[in-house]
Length: 149
Image 1 (cartoon, rainbow, N blue to C red):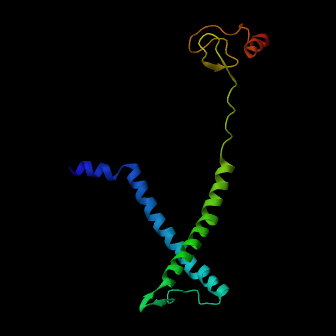
Image 2: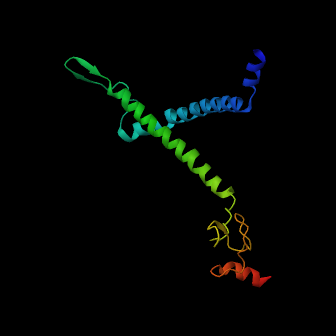
Image 3: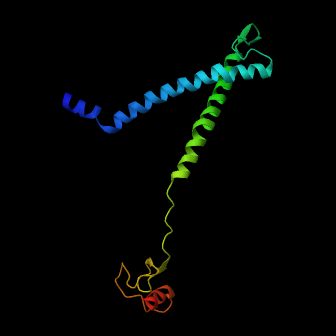
């Protein structure tokens, strides 16, 4: 029983997932700290407030509505999303396109006159029905390929 549990824990995807969660939690703490320490006070400077809206409320029929908590959460969400997008998503996307290998151009294809399967234009024999297609009329790529040999 413990041997199966041990093999489950030591599988690569479980360990990778655990590492990803730990790194994600640490990254969340860094981004949240950055937003709380720098960006939220900038919002306060721009609006003329302290940047902390948690104390903002309004009363209706003797019931208090703490809308400031929601405003703080909304501002924090937007700022965290902006930081993640501009500091992580955009740079990683640019790196991926820079290091991405060029996709190979697919070879031109034509239909086999016997079985109508799609085959490479330079083929002299159909890979599906094995009929010779090199000298067939209507397939100029094959005849050009044969003439160049």
